[in-house]
Image 1: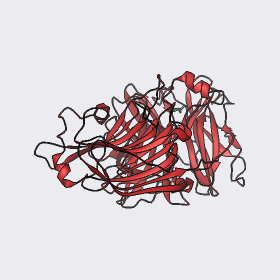
Image 2: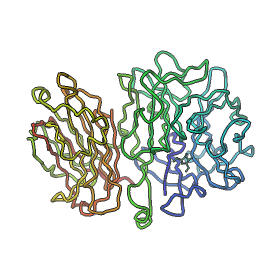
Image 3: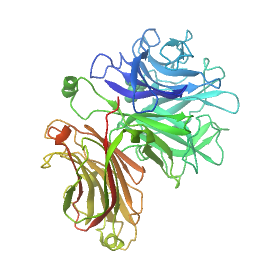
Image 4: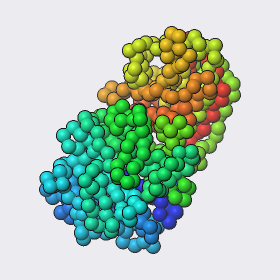
Length: 519
Ligand code: DQQ
């Protein structure tokens, strides 16, 4: 079983991804976890190498858990990771590449000083809640800083540690950030984003007026990744989320479907920040054992700050477009209320589909007013028969010919109030009809989409056999779903555009590409 992405980086032109991996089967076994290792020159085609870190020392004998890579100023990468030690305590360890001339970095050496940081009552760290060191950033005072995820009662926190030499780490008296009532913060990720530019910034980029910071934490309570945008106060060495953001379950999510333990890195060659996330299965364990594998990594996404400063934008890395082959194009097609139209000529089991919908202002003014209690988009998306007049419209993907099976990725538009000119736009990924097979988790996912429906509404969906990754509003809201069709397999898979609402919707343009498999 494969889990969290670990230590992504680019080194000598080669991308590296490590990941939590139980080599022995399609089930989780945290006491046996190794760092699986894969490399690529284009982020799309990957070769796997032998595991980079395996349990072998008292400081990691019960599992080599998540961690990050830092590229030191001399260009040398180092890894900090959590070891589950011989007493089942979580400790932080260091490993270095054995041979820096090898761009594949096939061999790694554990530091003889491990463990570098241990939990104890003296430092008030609970030994079962001390893990997942981030990429380090370099402070103006000449010290490195990392943060680790932790918990004190129901308070989740990101502990801060500083070091001059990367070996001796000192715990800061104050955490980088904390919030009560959230439970454990796993896999924190802390990085700068440019205010007015989609270009990425190195993790050590100094804060200043043109820079915001992002803190992401993975909450064990909900198994979701939440981020806030804020300011890193370098003098007080604390992170302060902007007004309106709270580091808890009310914070925005990278993805409103399956996406956890994610981690970003700075791609210095292409000056972008790239996000990796683990997509867990929605199938029962016995099915995973039967198929022989479980867990995958989402297509890597470029991530940057939206011009509103209120959210991040994510978009599949451009390299994915190299897998595109034949293209089917529609221009200006009317999707009448209640209609379904097949998109012919595309390998519907593996496709990249980008649509722009347009709704007339006249129809928008007639949209139903959202019910006062409908504050949870996931519930709105689950109301299968509640038509808003405007939508649901969108795509039916991984569909069987007669639609016994399909996953619906759709948009619904409501008026915000009786006398309001504002609209509420909801994006849904509805798996409830995705498979005839029983036993899978078919929860319907949904999220608000902060766009004006007077503008063209963009929806992109990457479809690959059992995974559907959707990006609404040019990447403002993302939803990833695992689905397991029984009928809609290979050539028996279809793709449809649909509009179940009563008003008409225009497809301004639709492009669907058949996608080749990667290596
Ligand atoms: N998975 C790792 C931990 C991390 C968790 C163990 C998140 O380090 O907190 O496999 O999925």
